[in-house]
Image (cartoon, rainbow, N blue to C red):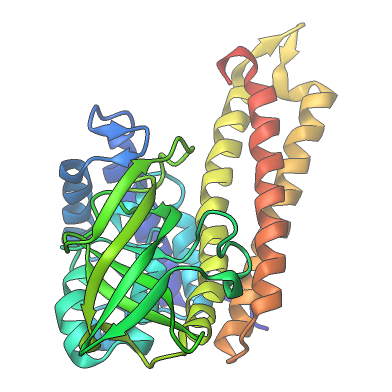
Length: 347
């Protein structure tokens, strides 16, 4: 594995870092930010800024207007975007849209791509991915899927409930995982305003980094046509792995940027705050925490890059991406927790 970055990637990284610092961070605290992410007006303003900067939906294929970034390149750029909680939303690389774009490019037919994918890449649409269900339905184990899709003439009729559906509120279309009468899982596409789709409630979750928060969805006799099947009948579980393994890792990439931001804030504070006759950072206990932060950040970065490299070699990485997600999320949580301690009452 070669850790050297090409001049083109370094230039793109620097451009992204400058864009986040100069154009996006000033929007943090904008009154249009809600506890569940930016409202549609703010989101569109951020998207327009990224589009004008040439930084919108970079991970999409060149065929569809993106740069076709490798997984390693995404690791570099997504970390930079995550330096602001609004960065991934502005650049259209936030969850779940980033993963859905990847899935739609891999599986959707040309008509489906024209209807949903292309406008999404252009920043005109948002989407959600509806797989997780309340108990005893599908959670970490997708084989427990309860939502049903019953054939009725040329249509399928979908019934069921989903929850923790990221970005559902305000989404334009949804990818639904449902079980057909033969017991197999299939993915279906539907506009969110179709009769039979109801957002029961928005959940009280910590999700300011996600446009639309997390919601509970109910499908009641939702009719979808055969041309709304995503891919082939009965291959929903296979397609889920196409989406989920890379998406686990892109979460880590964005989180790493957030953790690095927290560390930078705490480090700057420790360098200027005086306590007991010296700078806070000169106290051994605080210095140890800052050093531990640096080690955790680099450890997380290396796990991300290694797994991204394996994905670029064609490996499925179901195990490796799961391992990286645990390692990175716990490392980044430790970083943020230490930063809270260093900042004292400011948190």
